[in-house]
Image (cartoon, rainbow, N blue to C red; front, top):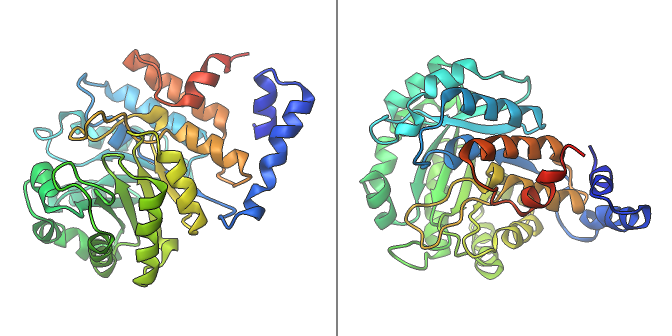
Length: 330
């Protein structure tokens, strides 16, 4: 379903539909990419801290629903100790039973060699490693320094010839313990990940304090330091309501990969007032309105969001999900 058709289903008359659709040329007026790849992190990042145990069948249904929406990159699960993250204890079963759609990348977080081998045995499309631009945050989150986190990941980096490795840098715009993080520190950690063999690095505003100004300063420093922004993704949380504005800023720098979570699920447990990851529905709606191609069917995406929110018995954090979710069957 295209943008104009969806707007039509909302009840707007033809003149209004034309007004909305006329925005589709905006990508030619701003220096933004014509295509954006969305990395859906909901099944892993969105669900991992949920207090209620989510049945494996529900997780599989969510991944399958997301696959049907046209998303081409889905972070599916995490091969971590079930003692540390009980919600991810069924990682192997999830990976075995999902309906793998040709052309879709199904990735998994692998914090160590044991997790890597388990993931490779189940033919994951790619693996991911997490570090941060803040030693205090890594100590709290994974009980080691940033340098030590690289040592832990050595076996994973060594496997980059066998499987694609994606790197994540947390706290790029602020840390709950150290406050403001310098762009130079983020660049340093990012370059180390590239040097170790990561094909792409996602820069995460973990506590959602970023603004357009701080986002621009960070990306300017990346450019000055010689980082190829075509290999950079952005990962914003919406704690202060700035996520979409920050994404728009990143697009103008040429960033063309955006992480997001269905229904806005997830969020940093250490962030004050954390409201979750930016919602995939909201990102797709914004990009559709700009005429930027994502390949994602918003209607099917809304259905996937409703599916998981119905199970969790809560409203989506997505503004688009709340506005259009009840109209999906009309």
